[in-house]
Image (cartoon, rainbow, N blue to C red; front, side, top):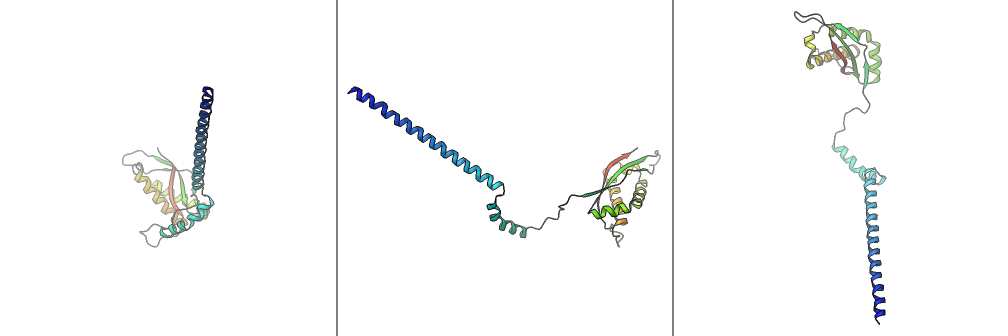
Length: 187
């Protein structure tokens, strides 16, 4: 009789271990399944899946109606590089003569402006040389002096290739948006 009880005890312990193992494996399987579904939803929602485009299209259109459209350019800017220019500067009072050597890039609106500027290059270089040679070294040492000269050059180039302004107080309208100094040396 003792043998029957001894044999029954290990038989009862084995199913409890198997049951715990089955529950552990099922819990692990459910956890992995939920993790995979969560990762799939996350990746699908951030990759711009087909379902998301259909659902968000009306709301995006509604947002476009409410917000004004951006006026920024979608195309990269176009630059026209001038050859290096070297001029003698007007000497400061009691100062020695100095010269300015610079390379200028013009930022223009479109590719057609590039052709216009290249066609008028001798006149542009002449006017830029005249503007620069009228400056004193002390005027060009700070940022404001350089910005003032850049504005004068921009207005001169726009007057040559753009539409001259009827109002003398307003600068001429033209294709040049900015004048950039890529090299600026005073000696």
